Length: 304
Image (cartoon, rainbow, N blue to C red; front, side):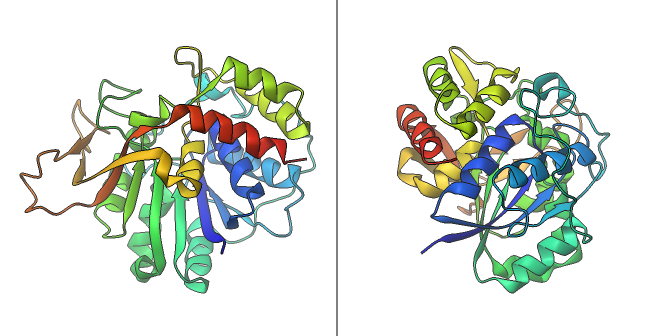
């Protein structure tokens, strides 16, 4: 039985890789892609999502909708320094990749979620679209099986000493999502900084097939480097869905800081001392990184 998912994303190189896995794995039924401002502006993230969908010939099967241009309150700050001016440098996708659907991301999310039973929502960018969706259409919450969200960290950030980029970009949206009551799996820097595409894996992609060539080009232009590799932050959401056994998780109550020097920080009640034993997230805290690399190559080997 396939998993029905919706991806809310801001491609971005690692988002492009996550979309690649979601589109091609037979265990996943990708119903909709919505774009949000994040790694680059929303016109570019929308175009990049369209490029990946078109690359795999799924234009008529997987709709792409454009979403929020800016965070709810906080001024917008992109990550073009990491992903390049277009957000997806390193491969020529051409200019004929289609257009987004006429519906806004929020309208498209509402309609797709209400039409399905137990859909899984997979945000890999800032959570602005999701916050707007929950604010305008709270009835969708009961139709979402769970949210598997890339973002946050309980061990240190990449924007400040505590704040991770997706949460930092729109902390007010993150707070709305974490307070929504929808089950959430947090796939943050605690694991994504361990799930590196190593130089060995990257070189193997280069000559594998056209998809490998595309991913090699993108990842080679990815200015996010840790040790001997590139963190594939967003791909971890898909790996988690397919192989949750590769992750160690903890059920915690998570709060989001929305102002001050700690803005965008994720604070977990690690002692269970302040919320009467209640939790609002299952936080990934460790990963089998070797299994991640093996899976990544195996997935790509079956693509075009």
